[in-house]
Length: 80
Image 1 (cartoon, helix red, strand yellow):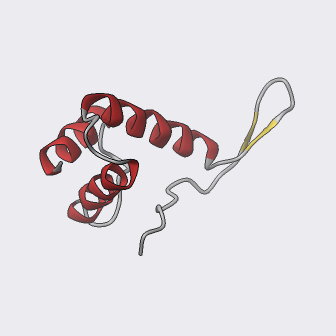
Image 2: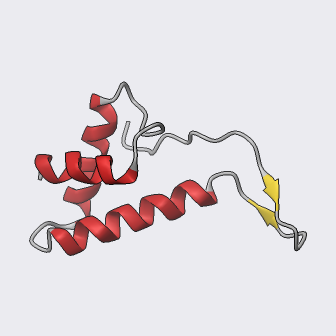
């Protein structure tokens, strides 16, 4: 229940020939989102911020894909 839903199922190989995990991009976006929320709400712990993002996901039928990062940030901020 607390795990993050993985929304991508295909992998890619960069032009340099380096394999890129299909989940690396999602993790990068998630990390940026959490960092932005931590900067915006320094009084909240990382766990509380992750919980707010998970609540946004729950309210969006269990997925975050299709929502702009700024929209997720706004909704999570409202929860916090």
